[in-house]
Image (tube, rainbow, N blue to C red; front, side):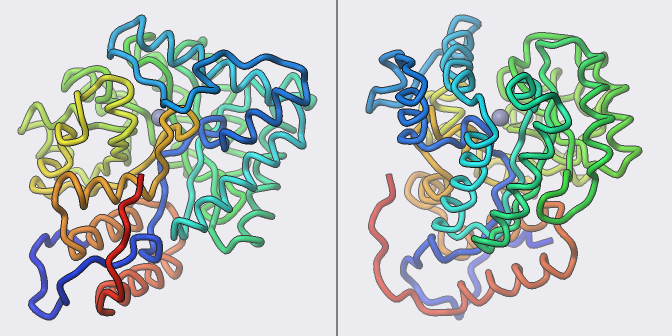
Length: 362
Ligand SMILES: [Zn+2]
């Protein structure tokens, strides 16, 4: 674990290129990973008209209430409805891996709920197998290890989650093209968390890591529910745990990592602006934090921009940004050999002098 926030005395001052900082991306949804241009291509191919907000240059921004979430979900559903073939599914995985490679990611753990794509490709099993097969191929082509988290939805029946957990269990592993974790996504205010406990038990028994969303739209009580019933090793978001210091310290003691997605939090109205995202509070408490982009298709902000925000908004030094990258590697579910190599590569990034001032990343 790399928890130190102090700057080593031999670290040269200046700004290193964040694109060459090795990092793991642990919070990215399948449809939300799509390039805007790909969405437009798919709409054109199907003769579908995209609603204005998906063509807008401005990212989606909504208030953190039920109506705001409804708008977000409608946009997401609109994009997802265009993904109707094996070719489209493979394109999303491949382009996500290429985009991660361009940003210096060495590992991507992408969340997918195969339910929505299943009718177009012959069922749940082929839907997941297509994603896994392309994840393997994309890993080989790009050098980014792409693994998958199967995520159930809070808005569907908990028995559906059990079906997904049993399916995911058949592909459990840690490598490219394997399922590494089991998640729970969608509106945190919907559904009873404990009703999903059985599905998570099935997943954990198969060796999958529990990675549910929690502590995003709701506060500490919701995080406690998730903690008590789903035994998470990582929390999707988890940022609202910062409102209860005892809870936060308990999570840190338990080794629960946080997948913090600053741009998503702002665009979904959880925080007013990036400076309000409690990244420094979590880091000072000793939490393991992996930055994530959540749904760059809608928020127009990819992983690199989250690191840039830590630098530009919170004033993180290069040494602190390297700590964040180390955390992302600590929190990922890759094999130990790969993790050791990536930690060494991050140390090498920090040890090298900054070659130039990096331009701001939007
Ligand atoms: Zn998410």
